Image 1 (spheres, rainbow, N blue to C red):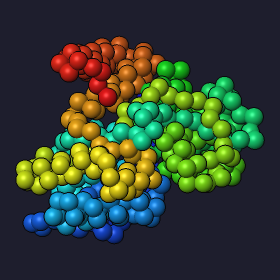
Image 2 (image 1 turned 60 degrees about the vertical axis):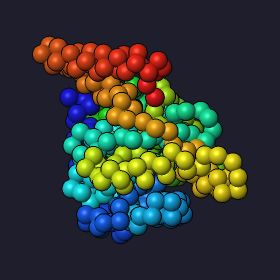
Image 3 (image 1 turned 120 degrees about the vertical axis):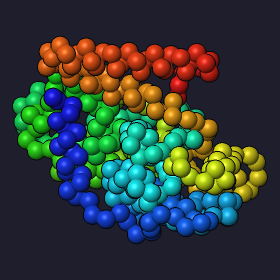
Image 4 (image 1 turned 30 degrees about the vertical axis):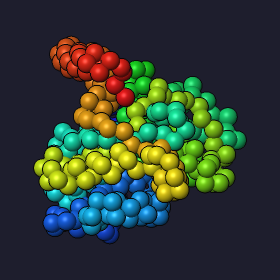
Length: 336
């Protein structure tokens, strides 16, 4: 149970390390007020700096008071939406799936990259001076220290499990001298300083560090990349007041779009978190990640030679692929 066992382990690590969500999150929103959750893979303090002016613009455009919720980890964001502590937020794809499945959430928009290269990749990084190769990582000889992502991180856990470890029958828990979970920034710093031999990260996080002039990005090198992953969803509670939904929809789909000094200012704010703007979307945006989950589960069953689980996994995967094919036929283009 390679993939499942890693997720359980990392989930335990993440929950053990989290306290209460960061300041700024209240309980249920009062009339005229919404609680907006922010994915903070680099830590809440840095996200506050970048998101504060954007949320101020949201207040001005919608007439709503916007209270930020900087989740201590990925699970906190899902639970906050599930229990009505947040109304709308920026999610990664895997926790977006969880927010829709059990958090009462619904996708209404998604980000796109300011570079025009839509999508990003999960990576494995090692110190720039290290001679460690991907083959060394896959030896599973317990000589290397490994930094994984949060259990609910698309690029930090799901993608490397789906595209690298599970297809090769590799169980990370049995491969490394030590293994710990951390956010992208923590993993990058640990690898650059030689505290970790190898860790997961993603191309967006690394590019942001370079754009911000952080020398740490030049102190690591990439030894593996995943296929391209979809951009992040923006999700609101299904039960949110329809009038509030329309105000939010209008804000996101026009923010940073158009000409003029004001729109240029908005784009500059978004570029600091590697967002070019927002496009309309729905729950079908998550089909690719659901397919990744199913592929990983099926391959894990094959590695175990569990025929019942293989049949169940293949049925689930076929269903998701049929759903995706139907959606793509309807819209006349690939799901993104």
